[in-house]
Image (cartoon, rainbow, N blue to C red):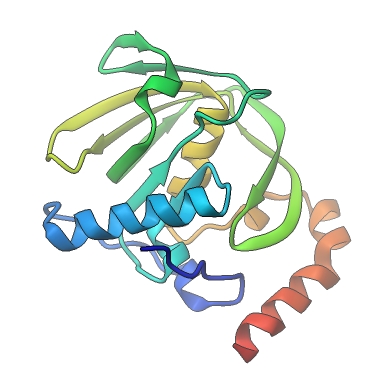
Length: 185
């Protein structure tokens, strides 16, 4: 079932998600709804907070993006990132590479806004699957960026928090307008 995406200004976007002990039927249904919602919005990632649930749950799917390549190792084995999509990750934890690079990011909770954000070039993510298996993902490219963006959401951090002050200043009036629209409901 497609859900409404929470927009900037809603306090749930600043909430740190609760850890998920096990993927019961409710969590599985939520993950399915999140995938449907993300795909309908043409997104590459969606955190539970973005549909109003403060949980450590995110979904990602970079398989449709042609112009921003990724690399991926799953549990130490090289895999084609497209064949591993979509990802449903519970309680993900990231280790970031020290090298960073700027790249354009947008967010489904900030319609029509984008900015260059500095992110680690590569990451290692440890997370649980819906089957309770612990997996390790080593990623670079768009997948690494998307993982960082989504894990930030799970911790109440928004991509605007990572913008340069110049970018934030140039988007200031649009951010205020979006926040007011959200608070009016």
